[in-house]
Image (cartoon, rainbow, N blue to C red; front, side):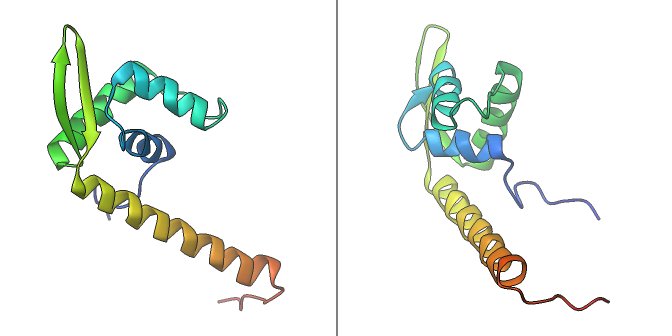
Length: 110
């Protein structure tokens, strides 16, 4: 079964959307993601601009202005909801981990 687009966010997707809570251009997004993650995640221009196009099409972000070659974007309401949904999903994973892996509860074998 094919995975529905944006059913879950990759780390790159998550951090791009998170960065766009503040208006930024693509170069600023790449720098902000690298800084936010301590260099753990580095997004190249090809990946970034491909994802920005997908996010624009999905209505997750809005293009706010163009200055020369620089395009600026900001998170739209659907993007905020997507980030919140992903945070809830990740919190569920952490909760399950704590309950089953750390809490000593054994998972029955199927």
